[in-house]
Length: 270
Ligand SMILES: Nc1ncnc2c1ncn2[C@@H]1O[C@H](COP(=O)(O)OP(=O)(O)OP(=O)(O)O)[C@@H](O)[C@H]1O
Ligand SMILES: [Mg+2]
Image 1 (spheres, rainbow, N blue to C red):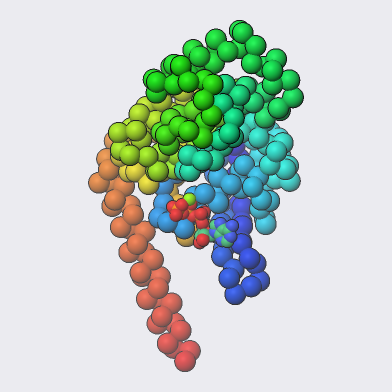
Image 2: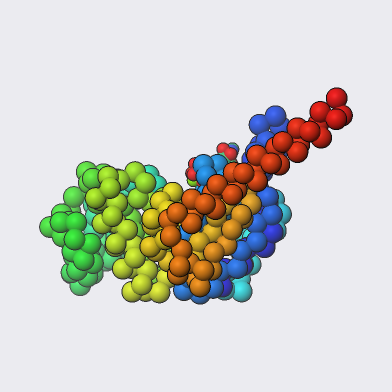
């Protein structure tokens, strides 16, 4: 379904500021997989999602979705198959436009032409139904600009818009990280309900071990630009939060060992 084959990405290559953010990542995602992506800060999680979405082209390797090679396809073309929600509630919506206008644009795959037609009677009642299903008290506020809403309301709407046309792939990058715990839990419930209802293939980056244990059927753990662990459906069934902490500890220990070996080697050459 989604085949990521040995991808590499370096930012500011061949400069003093070079960062090798992805160093040979291979992942095969099946249709209907709901994958939680974990990893320490800077391990390459967002870079992985951005590579799939086409925010940049990878330096090496390939990305294939449903048999179509996306590797050199521009971001705007991939957007017709890929829905995204980011950490920042201000991303992904047009703040000065109303809730109804924003949904109308999402329903037309980003095309603003014929917006009036898209806002005609039938469609608006469909929007009201969808917005009330969010249970965020927004159904009477369809004419309000999105910019006036709280972060949680915006994230719920962004999620609704990103999934309006049932994308082939849904990418969620810490989309509840900026919300208070109660609102985050609400948006997570909504996320789960939409993914289950539409059987969406999903990659969700999170720092919450609890979310990773509770949600989805697979966990990927990134470290230092590489895939450190791939926990499959069967293994995940028995997994608990403390097991995930133990895996993180293992990664850390291995890194310390690698560092001390590197130090010993470099000392020998001084
Ligand atoms: N546009 C960019 N220009 C330069 N460096 C970048 C850019 N984007 C990411 N990086 C670097 O690439 C590395 C991986 O970053 P990335 O954002 O993928 O990490 P992450 O796992 O999402 O971390 P976090 O949990 O903090 O969001 C980091 O060292 C980061 O500083
Ligand atoms: Mg990130």
